[in-house]
Amino acid sequence: MITRYAYYIYELRRNLHLEPSKLQETQNKKLRAITKHAYEHVPFYRRKFAAAGVGPEDIKSVEDLYKVPMTTKAEIQANPFNDILANNMNTNNSVQGTTSGSTGRPLTVIIDQKAEDFRLALWDRAYLENGLRVRDKMAIIQDPRNFPRSKRWVERLKILRREQISTFDDASSQMRILETFRPKILKGYSSSLAILADFCKNKKQNISPRFIFTGAELLLDRDRELISSVFGCDVLDYYGSTEFSLLAWECQNHMGYHMNTDSTVIEFVNNGNKVDNGKRGEIVCTSLVNYAMPLIRYRIGDVGIPLEERCSCGRSLPLLKMLEGRADDFLTTLDGRIISPTIFSPYPFKSLRGINQFKVIQERRDKLTIQIATEPDFPEDGHIQEEARKEIVKIFGEGMKVDFQILERIDIDPSGKLRKIVSHVPVSWR
Image: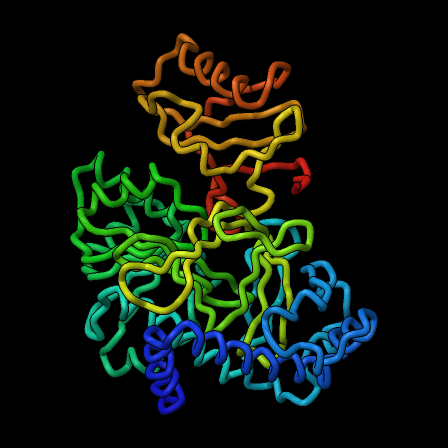
């Protein structure tokens, strides 16, 4: 395992400087291999391919993937487990992951050991490229159900050490651990780190990490600025999922997110068609490394914008310009226009005075509920709400009903995350 992990790190860092054509060639080779494997050994995909009249010989490159129907989480969950696992793999030593279930029923993902080593190397590549040193200590604030059961072998060598902190602990408890551990790197959900930063700002407590890595949630500009200013360091955002591990990551040039195309094929589609660079599209992923439970053209539920330009850092990986959130984070106006969740940073509030957090919920096409967690100096005359209502009506149209709920705090989700935008109105992509 150690030798394999070391090779993966070498291979992955080498890939960063390949010519784009060579990187594409590597991706296509991996794609052909895993599509053939899925067709021959995964009953679910054999049936899916056959129904579409497609065989593995028809998938020679990423450009051919459109021939394969997309896969949804609901489809995977509707099938017997044995039908979605490869019948030629020994899954006894595999790793099991579970999605957060923030959109409903969680999905269990089985990852073979080679794929797990590759996924760990994938994360470490991004960390190392962003300045992590092997002797650095990293504190990770996350759902305790995601804590590793044992320390990685590298930690037993006193390198790449980790301290796990529960996102469900209050900020005061988290700070006590951080002050003792003194990490050089701090990583966590963006909402958890924003709450911690706000606590440190108010209590005049602090630590001095060299970098902060955020992920698992949409990072709003307001939260990025708060976290960066309080802790006095750069904030680098990471985009990943349980199904595919790390998909894309920011470097210190902040020109976009480097997509890990040597691990996953990432498509951007609208109504089943590929979108142009610079246009918004639903993200559809195909794993190139997990042979135990292949996922091909899997609708992950997120929306983003691909970018044609390359990053000035010189790395070969193509860029995701912007991650706009989950499909159910998008709101719909009365006349059917789609509003990105990124607009709420800090819109619709002209001033955030007295506001600690807020959450926007679209219950119906014509109704928005805005939850506000207030601070002691929040005005009681309703002026802020009325101004916000006027701003919302400008965007969403006359007739949009806007209700405000004033709360002491906004509860985090069972996953430990805080979804700032939630829509119960199905989005109709155009």
